[in-house]
Length: 345
Image (cartoon, rainbow, N blue to C red; front, side):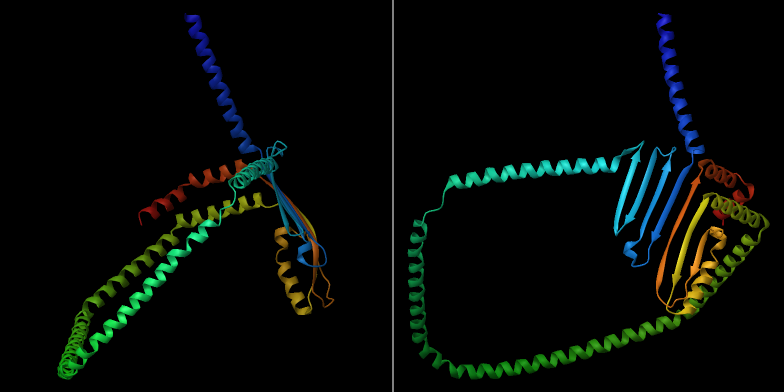
């Protein structure tokens, strides 16, 4: 019994050791196996549609790679895992699914067309039977129209007798309209006077609030002056200055590590105006510290718009450098002081 229990514990410990070893291996690979990148581009004399370019990022000695290409206005994306093109496999699977669905749709349409043929065409007897109700409705409408005309003719003598009473009603209606107009006039005058009184009240309130607004403005001014004093003291503090200088040095060192380790290329250009060509050359001259004069630039001065050349660079990034920089910044006393002072400002 104890022997079986010992074997189970031994198996569990071996499994835990294998898992920890794999985790340690992954951690070491992330820290000390670099992420490499490279890119290249080329343009010949002519339009920019002829330009070509390609960029590639790889890790684990090329086992995991992602590349992006641009040729003749078309982009090409490729992702490989230990040499297996995953993007191409996914495209093939999608194309197979599309072909299968299209075949199934074709079969369904064929089946439906056969069913329609079996059903046959509708007969013409329905059209013939629908003619009689239309005729009956037309005759009914004519009868109603005749009845309406007879009723109008019968009611005409009564209308002649009511003409006299309509004149009196019209006079009353005019007096009512005059009374309504007078009511509307007085109502509008009342509304205008009420609005004018409300505006006068609003102006009076604003005048009475001027001292209070001045007090609020003075308080805001004092608060702004306090903030300016706090920021000036915070930025001018020696520990803050040391923290800023440390961050600057670490960031520059990290950028120097991330920048390409090898750059090469050639560039030839020209413009119709020689002054523009000279100004572009001056701007490109300021980039020499970045590429260390590895890209040769040649102005042509032929008074024509032209640009052609190529460029190629590559570099690497180690994860241990990122972790080291982050830890140094996090455990620095001056940076901790700045963070604490920022939180309790």
